[in-house]
Image 1 (tube, protein in one colour):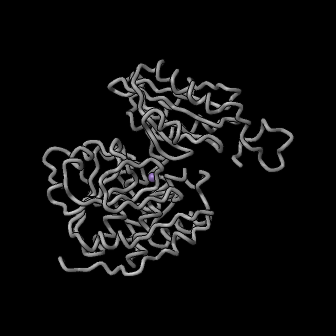
Image 2 (image 1 turned 135 degrees about the vertical axis):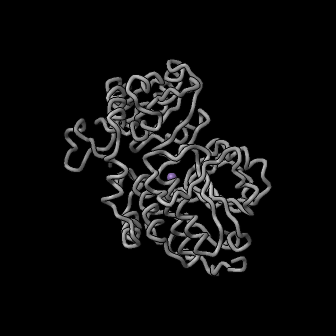
Image 3 (image 1 turned 180 degrees about the vertical axis):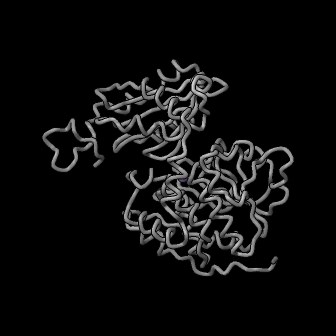
Amino acid sequence: MDQVPCDLVTPNLATTADRKKGSTMGIDWRAFGEFIAEHQRFVVLTHVRPDGDALGSQLGMVDLLEQMGKQARPVIGSRLPVRYRFMDSEKRIQRFGPGNDCFQWADAIIIVDTGVWAQLGDCGRALRESQKPRAVIDHHLTQDDLGAAVVLVDTTAEACGRLVVEAYDACGKSPSPLAASGLFVSLAMDTGWFHHSSTSAATFDLAARMVRAGAEPSTIYQQLFERGSLARTRLLGRMLERMQTRHKGRLAYSEVLFSDYAATGAIPEDTEDFVQFCRAIDGVEVGILFIEQADGAIKVSFRSRERINVAEIAQTFGGGGHARASGATLPGPMTSACTRVLATVEAALGDCPPPSAAPGDEENASCSALPG
Ligand SMILES: [Mn+2]
């Protein structure tokens, strides 16, 4: 087992270059191949409150490493959300905490779907103390110096899962059926089930490839979207009731209070995806959801349609993310966090025109719900 070499010689750069998204970004996978070849035991980390892309990327990377004859452990710094447990049917994912010796065990660490300390939670603290070599594979704009020898970031990738598939290609491997299912979840969740503006023909090509490799879209959809609790729906109802608009309807926002959980029986992770309802209103350019945390801090999620870079806005509050989807955490109370954030977003909106009209709908811009 110890002497299985990485069979990567020439990286398959065509995969990135041929994406046809008008991008020139492409990762040279040689450094990754060398990183894999030089080590035997890998911890694969991802961000806290992991989403579908984080977990799919993580499980894919573990499968790839094992196919390369390596040992790998997927580790997260917070609990595995109920919604995504079906992805880890082999119960491989470990929660980092006291007694987990993964950082002593590993020779090397691979971090997927994040490149910032704040997103690593307790794993980040252990990682700072660890001297183990590390690599980052990510598609987010915001990157800290994590001390990684290998940093492979492509912000044009619609999901980190795409980069993991490129890693398979570079190593001459293909995802197992279970990994393909996880990587399908990566793509599906980071594109909002193939509707965000990051979705391209290449997204469907990659999804088709994962289906051929064993992913079952119908089963995955049911697991992700048709297993919510009644409590979650009641919490959603409260959030929807509170929604307000500003700035001639270009900005829509709402809030979830910590007391809402006790009142509805819902749990904090139930708020995932709620922010999309803010942006779903006709004429809205920016949707914002304010979520009060147990410690009184306010988690803010931003979504924009086509003009406002919400990663930049989130960064002014110490957060980050993508141009169309980002987040930050501010000190409470709710009213002061709202005031600060809304003022910043309104300043960014300025005299922002309404989102582009749908084709054939130019005379009546108020009906233009479709992004351009
Ligand atoms: Mn992602």
